Length: 466
Image (cartoon, rainbow, N blue to C red; front, side, top):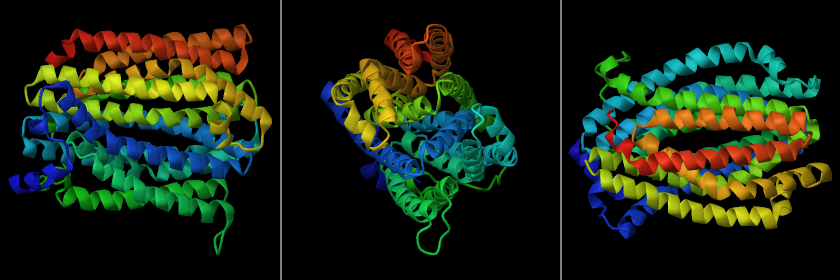
């Protein structure tokens, strides 16, 4: 086991090699964050290409995929109970150099992920039509059929997706950010090629449209599962999984994962459910506003990349420093990650404010009504970009510490107490339209940024037992 760990140290973060100066901590953060940012950039790029390729089919296709994905994100919120707990536990054990325990956590999490895939995937597949009938409130039959086709295939892909999320979460907890980057790069190539042939019916393949986009995604996830399996079971990241216990769940091993993960899952369900309710308010504004919202979210996701990258870096670094019994360095790492991310996202926010239209035209080149509405949304959200950086990084740092309860509470307050209530007030009562919905989101983000900043700087998370 020690030989495997030593061979991997060159390719992953190791707390024993990080000094206590801000410069050393920043160096460690960049080592962790750059591959994660690269991974997010690849995901965003493919998301943009996906949206652009589906967008060529018309507004109805964009709306169908957007609606299906809203419900899929709620399902994935449940799965955060495993991924968040796995990452935090693995990071803590690697920081303490207890590699066997980290491997046991991964083994148990893989078994749990497969069970979750069956429990969530089978009902979702067979109930796709009635579920989509609940969310396609406009009565548009084209949108309904497209959303149903897309959601059903996504449900079939859960078994691959959940395994991939578990494996990538464990590798990140171990400090190996490069492996997920490699997998994402390869699977995205499969996805793009599959889109080209299956959406438009190139070569011998039928023209499947939205259904073809879903099939391409399923195939890319299956390829990702194969690659991750070779990595994990081949010792990548320093893991050595012992299957002597078979597929049995050990309460002793899995309980701490769920102790951390359940509040994270509730947080994500609250967030996704809130986004869904928020989306319902926007749907009432018509197809053009709905499509503009989707396009603006996709364009804004360009700024998420550094935020998510440094949030993942903070999760790993905070967890490993706490495992190594270095809480002061855990505190410093979170603060340094926040400084870097606020700077980068502020610059991107300025670009959104000054030049929104070029970003929007990447997704919808011809529909001027959608372009104008989406450009307005980007200008509005530019105001909250530095605050969103604080939200992402400090939430990630607290998850790495296992302090997921307060992240959950602040999400409930922000999303349901502010975003939904204010969106209803601004859009339905006062008639401010799509702009009102996006200002409601801004207020939520700014308030949560303050709450998370206060919690992290209190230092109370350093005493959380997992």
